[in-house]
Amino acid sequence: MKIGILAGEASGDLLGAKLIQALRERCPHAQIEGIGGPAMIAAGCNSLFDIERLAVMGFVEPLLRLPDLIKLRRDLYRHFIANKPDIFIGIDAPDFNIGLELKLRRAGIPIIHYVSPSVWAWRQKRIYKIAKAVDLMLTLLPFEAKFYEQHQVPVRYVGHPLADQIPLQPDKIDARRALCISEDAEYVALLPGSRRQEIRYLAEPFLRAAHLLWQQKPHLRFLTSHVNEQRYQEFYEHYKRLTPDLPLQFFTRRSHDVMAASDAVIVTSGTATLETMLYKKPMVIAYRMSRFTHQLAKLLVKTPFAGLPNLLANKLLVPELIQDAANPEAICNAVLEYLDHPEKVEALENTFTDMHNMLRGDSGNSLAEAVLGVVSKNNKN
Image 1: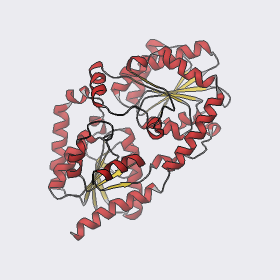
Image 2: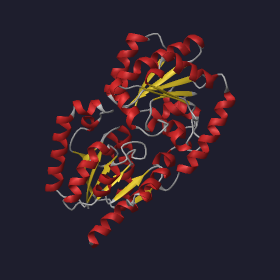
Image 3: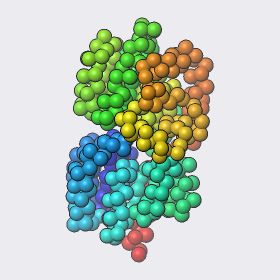
Image 4: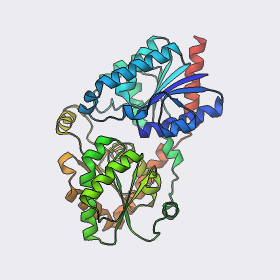
């Protein structure tokens, strides 16, 4: 069996790796190719292009990269037409994937899209293009599946693989031993995102907030992890320039250990907020983007929340500091609220445990069954 697959960034790479592992248990000799990062490549994906070419964010930045993205999509289309897979699976990256999926499906290739775009939050008319582009939508979150059902788009809620992977009761001491850090210190994690633009906009407020925290609580120590050496170096340059005396320890590809080892987390919006929730950590969500992108987002986005924990709960469980509100003083004060009030942290941990249970499921088997089901149906037709 030939499988085409495409992920666009670090979180999609991790999801893609789990999907590939689940498929290989059923089809050990499957040929899998497309675009993936280190995790997908390690799982057995032949990556035709560097995943970094797709790592863009916001509304404006993709426009600046548009010529390269158009060429990349054209090259992928030609490749998959010349080497037709039995199924193509697009993972997240909807602005890139949905257009490619539509063209491939018109050419007779069955399509699964894994990870719903936020059509329930903004640009809801995309649902009509998605309906033409996919044979099946796989959603990670239960409320997403309901939206597709309302619009008669084939959908399957498969649960979130991270909810299966991350234990209900993470072990802080084990994580600290794995990182070779103190078992007794109080740590705050800084997780400013996996994209270059996120480092650009968030490194300074995160680092300055950490410095303010350290000034008020000199016993605090800080941790950070980055998706690759390039993001590590970009963040480290800001650190050397802004807060070189801050007791901050750097790691690469150790975000889960860093979350588990921490007492509080300063994090960008996105999948990292869900991961932080699953590790039962109090968090402050902070996000910045270009001013034009922010103004456009305010016009288009229909949801009241940015962070996945708040979206799942449909209320403000954890602070969200967006754009100008994501300043060092506000971030510092929000973290102090946790550090100074352990009873609030305990209540949050209990809520996060309930939400973790809601998201658990046999997602590996569900994914494999969904993919093979679409392939089987197409073969019958």
